[in-house]
Amino acid sequence: MIRSMLAALTATALLAPAAPAAAFCGFFVAKADTKLFNDASKVVMVRDQDRTVITMVNDYAGDPKDFAMVIPTPVVLKRKQINVGRSADVEHLDAYTAPRIVEYRDPDPCAPPIVALRVPSPRAKSTAPISDGVARRQRSLGVKIEAQYTVGEYDILILSAKKSDGLQIWLDENGYKTPAAAKPILASYIAQGMKFFVAKVNLKEKSKVGGEFLRPLQIAFESKKFMLPIRLGTANGRGKQDLILFTLTRTGRVETVNYRTAKIPSNIDIPLFVQKDFGRFYKAMFARASEKAGGRAVFTEYAWDMGWCDPCAADPLSNDQLRRLGVYWVPKGGRARRGVNVFVTRLHVRYDAKTFPEDLRLTVTGDRKNFQGRYVTRHPFTGDISCAAGDAYRRRLLQRWDREAKQLATLTGWDIGEIRAKMAKSAKGFDLNGNEPWWKSIWD
Image 1 (cartoon, rainbow, N blue to C red):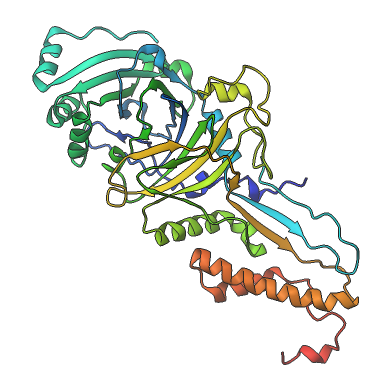
Image 2 (cartoon, rainbow, N blue to C red):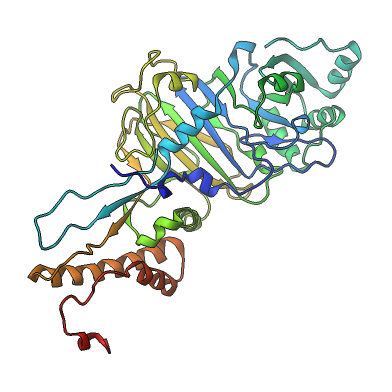
C-alpha cells in the first residue's frame, strides 16, 4: 500500500497548541511567578477488575527546577508502585489510534473495475529524612508526608492532608505557588480521603538521564473507583483544554459514566484539497462536534482490538510495549496478535471548569465493536472516458462533489463558497465536458 506524508499527522499533534508547558490530570505549581499552563495532555490507563495503571505524559519544556506536579490518588503508593516509563510507547499508541485519512482512486468507468488504492496514515532510592522542626510544621498544618521516594529523575512525596488551607500553605512554604482556584477542589479531594502524589525533578538524577523532556510517570494501584481526576487541571488552565485518554482493558470499550460518550463523526467523504490541510480540518471538525454537544461530551476517536487494524495508522504495539504500559496479562516478547485480549479505546475531551465540573468517572463495557475516526478522499479518473458510461460518470462525479462540499461545510462551519473554490482548483486536469462540442459549455 502507498503511504502518504500528510497521513503521518496525529490528532494530538493537530489539536495541542504550541505552549511552553502542558500537564495532565493534575496541575502545575511553580516557583515565584513562573507562568505554567496545562493546555493539552495525554494519559494512558490500564484497567482490569480493581487494578489500575496510569501513565502520565509530561510535555513540560521549561526549566526542570521549576517543575512540580500534584495528582490526587486513592491510596498511599509504595515505592514499587511508581515507575518512570518511555515516551516512545505512548507516542506509538497515539499514532496507532489517531484519526486517519484514507485515499481511493476512481476506476476507469470504461473498463472493468480495478482494486482501488488505499493510503493509510503512516505508520529509586529514598530521600533524606525530614527534620523534627519540619515535621512539627507539617503536623500544625494538618499535612503528613506518608512516603517519599526518588524514582528516576523525580523526587516524589505522598501527602495526606486534613484541610485545603494547610495543604496550600505547605506548598507555598516549600517554595511553590498554587493557583487560588485550586483551594475548593483540593478541599473536595481531602473530604474524599484522597492522598496527594507530588513530584519534582531531581536535577542530579535528571543530568544522568539527559534529554530535553521529562519521561512519563507511572503509578499502579488497586481501587474500586475507576476515575481520572481532571478538575485540578482547570485551576491554572488557559481556557478550554484537550485531554486524550487511552484505555487498555481485557473486555472492551471504555466510556464515561457521568458525561455523555459520543462517537466522533466518521467514515465521511471529504474533498481532495483537505489532504493538504488535514490538521486544520480535524481541529475545526472536533470543535464543531464539541460545540454541538454543548461542550459536555467525551468523544470516542478509536475503539479496536489491539492485535490488528484496518487501515493501520501505525503498527500495533508489541507485547513488550503493552507490558511497559501496564498490561500485565500479556506474555513477554513478540508482537501483539489478534485475539491477544487487549482492547484499546481512545477518548478525547475538551473541558473547562464550567462544562466539566466533575472528574471523569469511567466504566469498562463488554462492547468490542470496532470504531475509528476515518475520513475518505477520492481521486476522479483522469484518463479517456469517451465511452457511453463516461457521461454518467461525470454526472455522478458532480453530484459527489456537491455532496462533499455540503458535508465539509456542515462538519467544520467553513464557508461553502470557499470550499467550492478550493475544490475547483483541485479538479483541474479533469475533463468535465468529455467529447462535447467546445462551444456547448461557454455559457453554462
